Figure 1 (cartoon, helix red, strand yellow):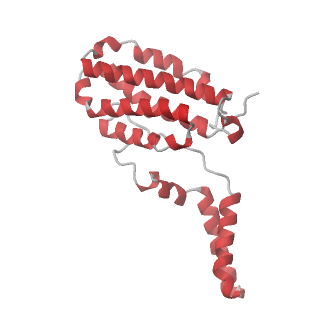
Figure 2 (figure 1 turned 90 degrees about the vertical axis):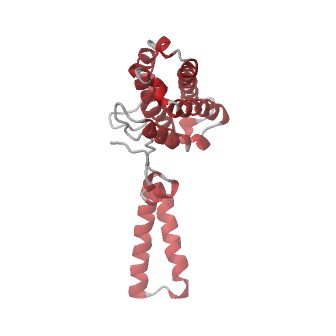
Figure 3 (figure 1 turned 30 degrees about the vertical axis):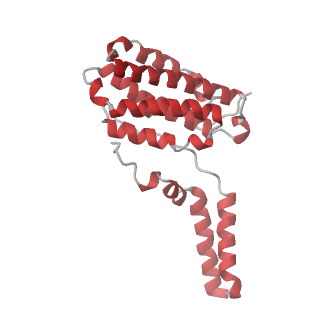
Length: 219
């Protein structure tokens, strides 16, 4: 079950400590210390140990991005807000156009969670917000970020698809927020269906993923 506090391992330091790059670098550094204890590297042993750590960190593959907390159906607003903060940290990795739409969607979602009680009785709309924050946004963003760098070029097909998805999610998030403000939530009955149809099609893959979730280059 998701919690409102994603914990230390979701912070930048925590993600680095648990990353493959840090683990490989640390193993090589430990190996260097063992060799130093047995044979001695002389006065330069600290530099050698640091060097082998850096080599390990450089050659190890980068970990795949995973932004989803795994929100339960009917998640409290605190959990949704925690998911929003996780996605928000990745804004710096996007170009200005994509970051603008992501920021707009996240700002609207934040406003909604702060007035969550005003959605009491509007179960369909609450579920739509949960899907946007817990599935559609993090899935779109992490799928894009897990593509090889050459496929993430600004203006390329994957970037164009990402921006298109972020525009839709921003629009729908703002629409719900405005409905909450104007107390017109019941006018949004068809919104969840629209998003399910849009984000369950293969275009979400931004170039395709295999059954294990690994990105596949587009032709």
